[in-house]
Amino acid sequence: MANLRTAMDAAFWDLNISTPQALDGVARAVPGDPIPLDGSRASRALRIQQVSLLGNGFPLGIIPSFSPSPNHKELGSFALQSLLGKAAFENWWVGLIGQFRPKKLISSIKAEISAAEEWELPLLKDVAKHFLDKSLYAIGLCSQIALTSSSSLLLSTEKHGERKSRRTKAMLFHKAKLTVKVRRNTFRSIFAPKLPDHDITLEATWPELFIDHKGKYWEVPESISLDCSSLVSESGLRYRFGLHKNSGLPQAVDSINAPTPLALLPGLCAKAAFSYEKSKDLWRQKETKEDNTVETEKGQFSLPSYDIRLKEPHAAISGIIGGTCEAWLSGGKGSLSVDPSQNTKDRGRFGADLFGSVCYTYQHGKFRNSFGDLTRIDARLDIGSASALAKKFSNLFRSAQSNGPQNELSSPRLNLIFQQQVAGPIVFRVDSKFSLDSSSGRHGPQLEDLICSLNYSLRLLRSGKVVAWYSPKRNEGMIELRLFEF
Image (cartoon, rainbow, N blue to C red; front, side, top):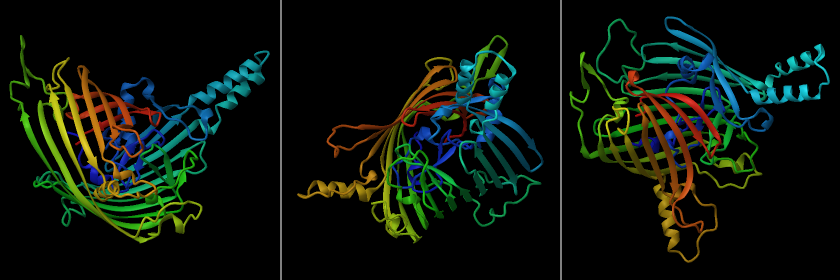
């Protein structure tokens, strides 16, 4: 089913969105914005690990991506990424990734040759100089050190030739143990005795890249966060809490003239959230041993589904409800105190709200045969802010309505996901989001976002796939390796 937990994760600062704008392939969703599409969430695997594995299936290990270069249109949108080198040791590894944008180079060489009257040595020297243009290249270094069996330290830095500064990230994270079995001769996690069922992350990035619900990018000079998230209990209860600090005024990457998102302004914020989720099967065709076995002249052999999450036809309804509470310990007065030129409202020092989502899922097929064995539809209705929605309805019964800016969360959103098997492990997928808002004078759902993708499921990974996606709204696309998206 569609990922219900995104409803709570969207309220925090660490919801990763896939983007080719950064070498690590990640931008953070702006907290407080409408819930992003499921298809836009970044892979759980590090980008450098993805490039290392995906390079085995591409010529010369070169992976293409497509993204406009803000304020440098001459560079073009097409880029090529490749793993330049890697080294692995007992408990740590390091890798070097590079990117090249060929459009400007090709255009420059073409213009140089067209203007030349004869092919001489000076012409070859002038052509060679174009290869030294640093704006064509980007390079990134990433290293991960395993401190214990479940805790790691990640360090990375990247530099784009057309940008003045480099981006640096440091992350210390602990992953909860998903089973109760203990393997011998392994290091014990330093967090395990106290919080064995929690994911803990301490991260610092300068500058941090954010993306808002309109597809626009923002850079925050310094971003530091500490987050603790529980696993979902058997009863469906989940909670998380954390601290986040922004320093410096956010800057629009593409020089847009728009108000700065309030959540990105300088300040220290403490936030906590809880949720309760439940799922009910209307019907389900359980997998049997016969489904996994194929009879041939040479005997029997196993033929599992291309993806274990898609192995059983079913129809189900699920839902999640929860609440958030935040307190700005500093900088709570909003942008009026740090940037007087912007006419935006006060974000307030304290806030609390409720959210909820309900989803219907229908799947036909077991995704095991080569053709016509998977058709799936997910329809999810999101209410990002119960207070904003209640205020909107109350204004409908008032004679004098407010002329102030409308809260983006006041309108419910309808997310539709359609998946259709093309052939074998290849699936065509469309993620779309509609705003159910008629206040603008236009009646009916309004399309807000759309992502189209081709997915190649990897049966050996049980629930892994290569995804090639394109976003018309952002005019971006890239190829990723995604694992266990549930």
